[in-house]
Length: 117
Image (tube, rainbow, N blue to C red; front, side, top):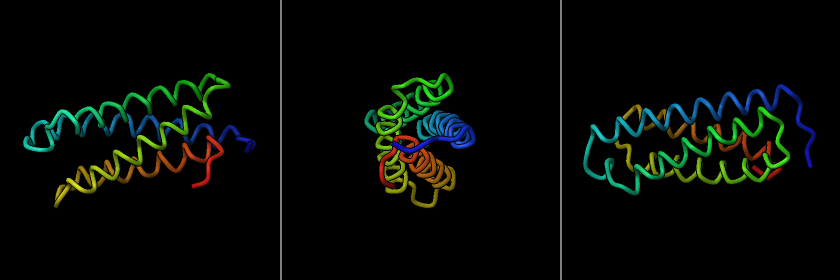
């Protein structure tokens, strides 16, 4: 298991909170766009990503011994969300930004989980 410095934890918490906010904003943006963007499957993934990121941030903030496996799951969901946003985005800049923050959050969570990147 990796030793996590407070700065690593703080950076991951910040990224998780940023990603949660981005996915909530993207959910609203996608509803406005309609079509496949408003599909129940896409909306569920955005909400799942927002929820797991917010939960992971709270687990890390309180130094829960369960944060490594939660961070591992967070990374998996963030990667799935990023892939879907990249596939659907077309020329949509907000979706590109959401995919980028999801990727950064996934990478940070993988490090916090002790998983290979």
